[in-house]
Length: 253
Image (cartoon, rainbow, N blue to C red):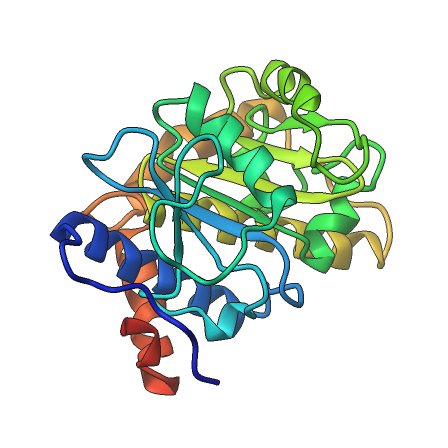
């Protein structure tokens, strides 16, 4: 499907690089089955432009997003480019809130995956019963479901419940992760998604084995030793982009 695009004239190199990185991420999510019709969002700040960030054009599937079709908006939801696409208020309200108040929230991802929604709808949420779940023990915030996130007044409670954490399960709703970089947010989402998938599979068979707090502490302490140099998630995300390119390189335009 052909998509309308913004003009690259006078666009900074930093913005174009951010557009390509974010477009690649949307395609990776589509490849991994994390899309939800034309809904859900991944947003990314544009380096050097205070308050400006990129969001998906409302109406396109994740698999249709390209670098030039992403919409540039300010923290108040005003479009800063000539994109013909609208922006989904349910995405803007939540993401703009965190981009506005959290300087380290460079990239924000929100999805409605089956596993993420299922675990967020479970009493007790994610439990330390598998390798990936142990990554997040004590690091997940929870926020009660208040309906579709289109009301500004919910923002104060979202921030309060998030606190100093950067991973949240929105109860009865889904996954929300943030990162200082897009690859960091990606690896958080991937790991949390896997944790949820495995918890669902384990609980379907019987009573899960709970990992003890002392072992969780050792696990979290030593995780960095199993990471590839280059920054959190960098090698993982690059590998996924190479797989996407084998399917379609059109996202780069």
